Amino acid sequence: MPKRTPFVGGNWKMNLDGARSRALAEATAAHAAAHRGAEVCVFPPFVYIPGVAAARGASLVGGQDCSAEKEGAFTGQVSAAMLVDAGCSQVLIGHSERRHGLGETDAVLSKKLSRALEAGLCPVVCVGETLAEREAGRAHDVIRTQLRGTLGGHALDAARLVIAYEPVWAIGTGRTASADDAAEAHRTVRQTLADLYDVRFAESVRVIYGGSVNAKNAAELFAREEIDGGLVGGASLVAADFATIVAAAARRVQ
Ligand code: PEP
Image (cartoon, rainbow, N blue to C red):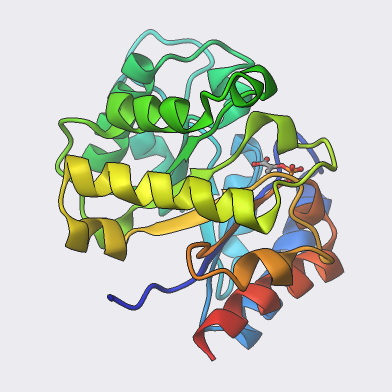
């Protein structure tokens, strides 16, 4: 099986200000430097990206979203090329707060993925079911449909792709998927990648879990072979908690 470098993303969402984002970037960079076995990336609000990029040290910087368009009359949008220009190497595509909060479809997200790849960004593609879909027994179908709709038809480099499995009911709720449920969903992600590409591709892609990951539950989740790290919202805003999560991910390669 190919060796996968753990990946931990800190999604800061619409939080912090300039000074606090730079301070958090510096603290996070120090933890990333201490745990080089894991790749650590922070996703600040757009306007703070240049300041964070200057303070990033050993951590990567990504955008929380990019436009589906290349350039032009798209008021309020930020292009993938602009993210690169501002210092980003990664971008979130299809976070649930955009899929469900803003109604972004797989077709739109597929276009965003095209723009990200053209610009040379590494995409972190998010998928996951709602509570109603899980309760209806449709969680795995939803994961397969979102992956096919967003990734299908794209030429992808497995080493530059991360898939984040984020059940919508676990994001920002304090309710975490059990390690068993998360691992099972990750196997569905890998099987779908194997169907779309091939087994070697599927085994090389990092598949990470997101949904109320915190300093207490990270070690149990990341101990599972299927879970290559985490996408972390609330706990990424607390430097000490995020450090514990990064350390838990880095232990996968020790
Ligand atoms: C997220 O923003 O992707 C996320 C998982 O948030 P939280 O960790 O707060 O649930």
